[in-house]
Image 1 (cartoon, rainbow, N blue to C red):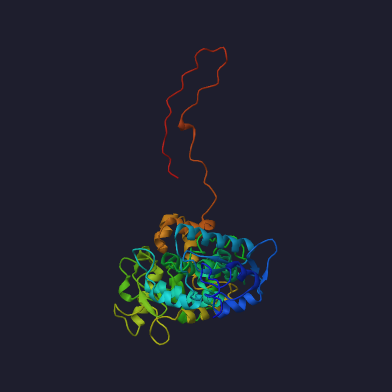
Image 2 (spheres, helix red, strand yellow):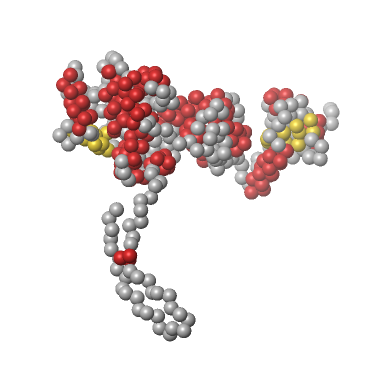
Length: 427
């Protein structure tokens, strides 16, 4: 009967340290681990750290269950920091079983059941936007990467990837939002050690200019655009220019929303991604004034409409149903190009409305209510460059009162000043 091999504390038949040196397979390794270690080389002056064939680094460490596990990273420092964290958890008695799930699988399962991170929950439209952002940007980028292996550096690389090609900050922000929420949920569930997207900023990661000011049409631009539009589209574009509505809001306006006597139109819903739902926010539910000219043209359009009931849509697509945003963007873009404003989009009409209101002397607060922004800070943030900077002449004059006249050093008592009187001067 042969001699029984020595059993080490972790159940292996050889000392744990020997595995790192010669690359022998450990009892809890998978075949992929063995294959990965077979092409690893030790890093001089960094005991236990190996360099992998793909340029990354790895190190094995004992966790809180006494099992040997491998930690990986892009740099030696990152690997050592991860190993130190595992050892710290082991000393504290903490055990973390991080998920081995791949990003693409985890993301699709997560978004299917995502209910938001606040008590308000999440609207179905927002969840659909998150799903599309994941499929368009995050899943192709991270693909089969293990969720637990994602680092802040990976998330930064993702934002830089999205920004490539001149995409603006808002696009990057929208692409990052579902990733950040998903990783936050994963951290709370214990599937990852911490949220690697937390604290990642996009301010300096975009390749486009920092000053992304919205563009607005001048009155001459708008006139030329209207001239280039086919007759059947002119009322819609005028409506967008004067009301500042989003195309999704205008698509859902019914004749019952238009108060011809009061010259007002109510924004009660929006149509987006094939669904009719509430406006983008609570502030989006609003009543917008109509000019006499626009009200008259809408009245004429209602009289000529095939369906003029209160429930009928004011603006319809070719089939008589809701407007198709893609189709609107197509014919709008063709007219804009002919008018010499090829950069303009249907949403540009909203910016133009805000610009004209500010030029007419409307306050930021009034423009906020008109456009349906949640607060004036949003309006100011988007349109601050459109707010007139020229200050009027000072309204103050001599009636503020006379100041004491300068006295000689020898004078013991200065001449009394007349009482100051402040008169309110309207500007």
